[in-house]
Amino acid sequence: MCTPRGAHKLLPFFVERCAKSLDKNFFALYNKRRSIPPVNRVPTERSLMRHFQNYPILIRICALLLLLSGLVGCATHVSRPDHLRDTQGIDVFDSMEETDSQTESAPKKRIALTFDDGPQHYSERTKQIVDELAKYGYHATFFVVGNRIPGGNALSYAVEKGNEIGIHGYTHDQGVYYDTCSDERYHKEINQTAQAIRAQIPGYEIRLMRPIGGSISPDRIRTSPYAIIHWSVDSDDWNNKYYAGISDEEANARIQTIVENVMGSVTDGDIVLLHDIYESTYDATKILLQRLYEEGYEVVTVSELLGDQLEAGRLYHSTYE
Ligand SMILES: [Zn+2]
Image 1 (cartoon, rainbow, N blue to C red):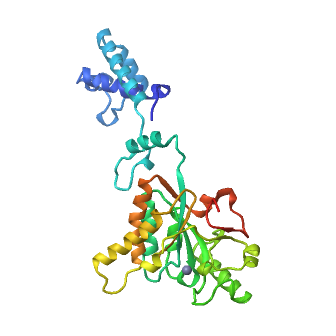
Image 2: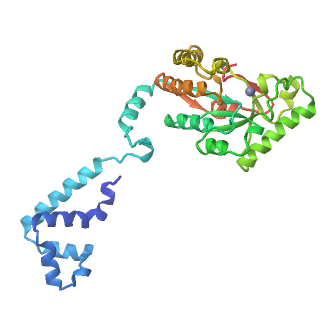
Image 3: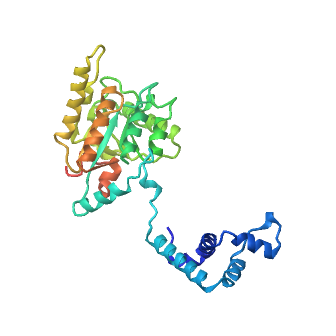
């Protein structure tokens, strides 16, 4: 953006424009008089002004009028920041101005979407979900399984794009829950997952843990170095995943069920449970994000949602319970 304060810097530019429009031979005359070789014919600000003063008064008045109109136009023009252009190059500035004025009086509703059980082996699904979130400027929290981390870059990709990583467990073995398993197994599950996260994202500060199946004893909550995160809205997506030979109609019905399970009960401050390992969840997430956006929701990480409330050794379901 330029302003009249920087006008002196623009003077040579406008003098050049005015002179060009008034006298096609301006530079030819200028250079001829100075007898400068063509390759060096670059007029300086001072030499241009000296030459400008030699022009008849009428031409100088016209040039000054053109200069002033240029300055006024420049002062009223506001450049649009790069971040207000989406990846397709569409200028969203106008629509954001409208949205800002419409929502100024109403505070934005904020929720956290959480995805468990990833990153899936040999799959780009976690990264695909991250890409969908990014289209809306949304961020989510991924509670990861430690032995599914090595060999990919889904976690570092997610974090680079503003998402958050928390611990789920290392093996996700059937029957291993943190309210009944041995202390040795519990600590091994948690610590190995933390190591696997940091192996991919060196120095990453892990603040959150979601126990497998949501099961954990009160004593382990209290002594945990992490905040324990449950949920307040269950998408039931694991119960609506695709199966081999599913018809398009049935697949679509399952997507709609997942979306409605969330949209039918979500409210400001909720933490929503999803899983980033199912194709059906990915398909449902694309619709879900669009619906949340249309209904004015901001989707943030769990740490952003809970903010100052967040403390290690405490259990959370949402911002309000
Ligand atoms: Zn799980």
